[in-house]
Amino acid sequence: MTDYASRRQMMVDTQVRPSDVTKFPIISAMLSVPREQFVPSDKVEAAYISENVELGGGRVVLEPRTFAKMLDALAFDGSELVLDVGAAYGYSSAVIAAMAEAVVAVEEDEDMAGESAELLSSVNADNVIPHTGPLAEGATDHGPYDVIIIEGGVEEVPQSLTDQLKDGGRIACLFMEDRLGVVRIGYKQDGRVTWRFSFNASAPVLPGFAKETAFAL
Image (cartoon, rainbow, N blue to C red; front, side, top):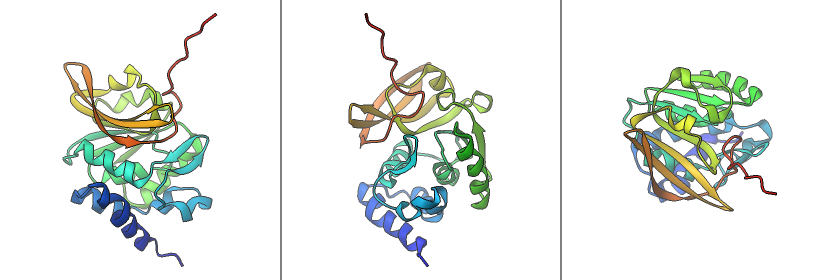
């Protein structure tokens, strides 16, 4: 039988801590949430690799380093309402739930969304609210949010999503520029989001977050 607890410890010791992520709430959450339960059965053995885990259809579970550094940059204080966009089977939401007041998990794939509700319940992530709908639309009914995190690549962020961020709130996005990606943290003040560089990473661009191609004759 595979010792997944040991794999989680190794993930933290070899991928998370060496990336300068040492905050106790992040380490604790990533050690406690069984990542292998939040991927398809044929991907279980790949759950702890230092790469994005492919879910099909261009969707991934972000590699541990990328996800941990995004959480670190967002600097949770335990009181926030968080919008988790592209939650897939719910791994990211389960981790964030341990550090936030509540999480709204947005997923547009109905199969993944349906399965995530059961998986989140199985790990007692009772402060996660599943929401099924287009990723780029967020979840206006539950906002505005203190924090928004997008679980995949983006080329641009719709204003309809940043409108759901509270003034004084922050948003983490992985902007893909050709094959290179840059994680930036956006800070909203007086209705405007200002972006700051955080670190480099890579992931497929999520549905609804690609730049519209201008039509030319």
